[in-house]
Amino acid sequence: MMLSRRQLPMIGAGLAVSGAAQAQRAWEPQRPVQFIVPAGTGGGADQMARIIQGIITKHSLMRQPMMVVNKAGGAGAEGFLEARNARGNPHLLIISLSNLFTTPMSTGIPFSWRDLTPVKMMALDEFVLWVNASSPWQNLQQFVEAAKAGRIRIGGTGSKQEDQIITVAMQRAMGTEFIYVPFRGGGEVATQLVGGHIQATVNNPIEAVTHWRAGTLRPLCVFDTRRLPGEGRITDTMGWQDIPTCKEAGLDVEYLMLRGVFAAPGITAPQVAFYTELLNRVTQTPEWRDLMANGAFNTTTMTGAPFVEWLTREEARHRSLMQEAGFLATGG
Image (cartoon, rainbow, N blue to C red):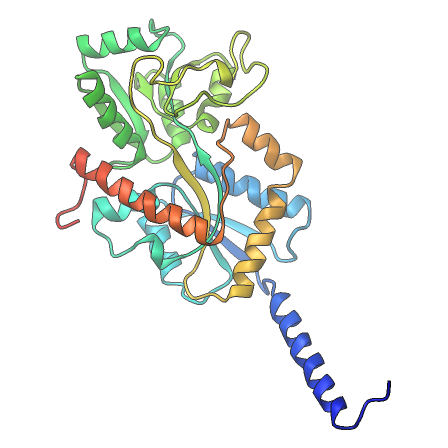
């Protein structure tokens, strides 16, 4: 079929538009990407961020390097505000935990998750009630009896954050009172429990699994509606699947925590698409599967509208939890 001179420019224009669209879709970082952790070193968010960084480097998933930076000041407010103020900067990401909700509610800082660009929910993290393995408490019932007999020191990450929310919920369910001791990160919390400076924690599995495997910590229950997934054993006698839920052990308290990645506000759709695909590729690696198994994560993931809807519901739920605990800032 012969083309007229009038048709040729139209086809040329179509090719130009197609080429421009392809170039737009093919955006990639032009300089190193800063990956902010709004929490201290050694905790669950820090560990996940550094594993993501390592996977990207090992498998050459991105041409530019990724640099993990901890900004834990103000219960993570330092990191959140830096990300919020980086409008339009596509070379900045931040990994989130539930302080995405609790920090602005407890401090009154002018920030909300809507000030960022949601990219991907990577997983949901669990909480386990841990005690020192040398303690006399072999199960939850014995721990509750001890708590009613005298005040127990429970360590956690930050004040008026996830760990303390769970602690307050435990107090109400048990009809007792704990001494809550805040630390900067989950790694430090686990170390303090191993050293006997506190008597219990509600750490994430990944923050305490090394100490459990070494025989220095003991799990009593998990704050989920179902037992943790797993096969085999972590210690000589137990695996993740052997830890009872707190509810089945007699304590009706449940809590799961977000592990998600956000970008700065105001970035373009192709830039969001790049990072979404990058993180999708991360989750397909054996290293990521090992992390999910070793850390006993709930492997729920979301992007796009479902992720936004989930964030909206969780914000409302956390406001209710913070209000019940008396943790809302004045006017919050």
